[in-house]
Structure formats: C-alpha cells, structure tokens
Length: 503
Ligand code: NDP
Image (tube, rainbow, N blue to C red; front, top):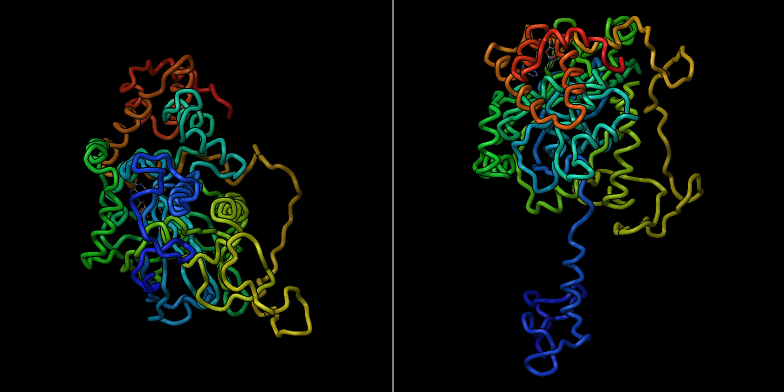
C-alpha cells in the first residue's frame, strides 16, 4: 500500500483511488458490482452539480475590484466607506442579462443587471441595480406577472412578443423603461461600455443624524457603446458568450474597466414638493434640478479563479445596507428587501452568507445557529442567545437612524386623482425621445419598436398593437405615426380607439 501523499487522487473523504477509469465488474465484460463506491460517488456528485438557476438574471459575469473615494460626501453620509478621500474598499460586481436562461445569448435585447457588493468595515453593502435608471413597474405585487411575460410561453415554450406587448400595453407605467430597452441602449456592447444605476431611491444619513434621499449612478469611463439590432443579432450567431468573453479577456489583459460613481441628492423637504413621486421607480430625477455629485471610482481588476464559486454563488440583496445608507419608501425597493434574501435562502441555503464571496470579511456576531451547510464553527461554545451573562456583544445605539413621520392612512393605494403626476407615464420618456436622443438613436429606436411589435400574433393582435400605439401617440405623435406606418396600421383607426385600455 502506498502513502497517502498530497498528489494522489482521492474520494471526497480522502480514500486514495487505485483505479479511475475501469469500474469493478464480474469478468471483463460486466455486470457492474454495486460495491464500487468510487463509481457511485463520482456519479452522485455529478448528478448534484446544478443548483437552482436564478429565476431572473440567471446568465451573468462577475469580477472583483476596488472602489476608491475621490470626493468628500460626508455632509450627506456617515458611512465609513466614504469617510476619507483616497479610501479603498474591495468590491465584487456581477453583471447579467435578465430574461434568458443560463445558456442564453449575452447580446439579447434586455436590461442588464449591475450588482455591486462593497466589503465595508461596517458590513457588506449591496447596491443591486441595472444599466437603466428606471424599471417597467412601480409596485412589487406586479413583479411575478411581469416577469412571466419576459420568459417562455407556457404552451409553446417560446419567448412571446405577444405576452410582452400585451402586458406592457396594459401597464403604461412601463413606457419609460420600454423606450430605453428599445433604444440601442437595450443592446450594449458587453458590460464595460454601459452605465449602472442603483435605480431605486435610497437614503443617506450623516453624523448629525440628518437624512437625505439619493440616487446612485455609475458612469462608464470606457464611454457608451451599443450594438444596433442587426449587430446584436449577428453577434448572437457568432458568440453567445460575447459579454463574458469581453470582460474576462479585458481584465486578463490588464484593461481594467472603470466607472465613476456619482450621486443625486434630494432633501426630505424637496421630496415632499417635487411634481413627480421621487420614490417611483419608473421616474428619474432630472439632472437639471438634482445635479450629479462626484463620489469615487469603481475599478474591476481581478477575475474570479472559479466561476461557480464566486459568480454563480454570489448573492446580492438591496436589504444589505450599512450605517449611513438606508432605504426609502420606494415600493419596489421595499418589495425587494424581503424577496432577495428569500430567493437566496431557497437557492443557496439559509447560510448563504458564509459562502466566501458573500461573507463579510470583518466581524460578524449574532446568535443565528445551525441550518444546512453551517461550516463556520457555528459559534463553537459561545452562547446561542441574547442577552446573556457570558459574552460582551452589545447593540450600538449610535447606529440608529432618524425617525420618519408618516401622515397617511393604510390602504392598497391606487390614487387616480393624484396631483403629483404619479400617473404621468409620458413626460419623461417624451423628454428622452425628443431632447436627449440623437436623430440616429430616434430612427433606430423606432425601427426596433416596429421589429419587436411585429412579433405580436394571435386573435388579440390588433387589440394589443392598437393599445400600445395609443401609448406611443400619447408620448409623441410623430413616434406613434411612424410606428403605426411601419406596422401597416391605419392611424385614424388608432386615433379613434385612443380610449381603449384599462387606464
Ligand atoms: P439630461 O440631458 O441631463 O440627461 C440625459 C441622460 O440620458 C444622460 O444621463 C444620458 O446618459 C442618458 N441617455 C442618453 N441616451 C439615452 C438612452 N437612449 N437611453 C437612456 N438614457 C440615455 O436630462 P434629464 O436628467 O433632464 O433627463 C431627461 C431624460 O433622460 C429622462 O426623462 C430620462 O428618460 C433620461 N435619463 C435621465 C437620467 C437621470 O437620472 N436624470 C438618467 C438616464 C436617462 P449618458 O450620460 O450616459 O449618455
């Protein structure tokens, strides 16, 4: 028998293999003996290699990097990550597409996830956003229905433009995000050449315990680069994994991608007086009124050694904030606070925060014990309850947030008569189309909308197309006419049906 040396092939329990390619059989032609444990272990572990795929954002790419503070924002936040110009914090970032499965094409027309985990000394802070500043819906109760329309049809198992446009046309709050999705920004050239946005409204709390509301923007230092629809489709045929390849190769070649982090700030007083609801995820805060403030630089400079370990097992949650950064009343954010950790407990288990990429590298003290895959010593002999007479773990009241006052009543609110423009789904996309997009971007967007809406089929085709055309008309009449022309629709008939629809 040979020594159990470090370079021998072994089972997971350390038994050295004497053989790795020939199964134990009765005679050279078989049958196979049940006692060949090595065969069973190899097969059994292989059978369990896949963990549940994320329902959304399943195809992703990730890298480690550094966040460096360039400007002092301590007047707004006491968060330790921002407390000194020049301070560096380790980060992990995961980019993703949203609607496709793990093997889907990286160049699909889709929003892109942009999730950042900052390993701060006050705990891990996750900013879990997208490459767009807004979203399709503003109430979390709609999320499951909306996502079903972006996935596969239950009968055909195909992606369905009919489901998508049916849902969007019945939910005009989606128009802003749909316009951005249909512009060339819906098909970015990989992940390096796009912006990221925290999207939700968050809050910041300073050393005087004063609160402001904030929006986070990561502006790409590489410049924006987008594919046209034709280029994105051509890339799909050439390289399904274009964005993954682009990111891994850039970092391997020392071309570390960077983003400039900026914030917009709104006082509590201002938040009560804006014409739009500043906690509505379908709206942006205009830069003219709420200018961008420089904060720091995010750089990605290290590919993970193992994709599954760090990218597949990464778990981000908007609920993970740190002292000095807080939530806001944004309903979508509030829904995500509960839903994201719930998804991780299902996908990775209740101890998902012990997985190295998710683990806080600084002190973690609590009385949570046991559960599947508890591998960190489980608190050893230390007490498993609080308060107790044996340790000195305490709460710290200096971390308390200022109180917030509410002056409303409880209801499942849908305020049809809202005066603050909650139901104005048209002004902001109109501004984007008319005032921000170049003529070329406008032309491409209209061409992309016509192409996408052409996919609507079935008995409700006319109803769905006319209903969506009404929204385009309300946003911009010329846009509506050009889309109607492209779809071969009689514009007068659409004008007559302007009252069609739920709202
Ligand atoms: P600004 O002119 O100050 O800002 C326009 C913004 O639009 C820039 O941040 C620009 O990003 C971005 N942009 C340009 N083309 C597109 C596109 N095809 N899709 C999405 N974003 C694009 O105007 P306002 O702040 O007054 O906003 C006007 C409209 O611009 C808004 O209604 C909204 O649709 C859009 N927008 C606004 C943002 C905001 O936070 N205020 C953020 C993003 C979009 P870049 O600098 O990277 O080119």
